[in-house]
Length: 109
Image (tube, rainbow, N blue to C red):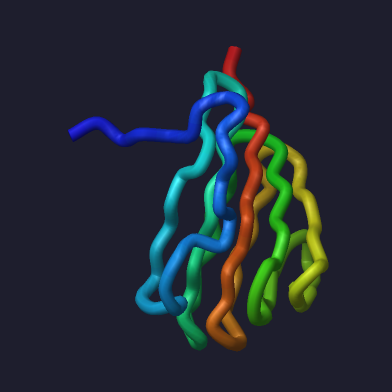
């Protein structure tokens, strides 16, 4: 079954429904050069070092996450955000149940 994404002009519920449970990601927008997804993480979840294929903006909507990048660990809390350049390695740990909104400007030629 093909994944469906939001259409241009469509309202999107970035919070989703239900409590934050097991790790889950849901793509909200996907185009040739843009991907936006919400990422729900239960407390204690560790995401090992990886990199995104484009400039990445991470916004914390709910909870708190320790975000390791560029030699530092920063705590994201509701209403805070950070961005990383293309392919910058990063890792994260959910301090509490958390919900992130992640936007990637894809580096495609």
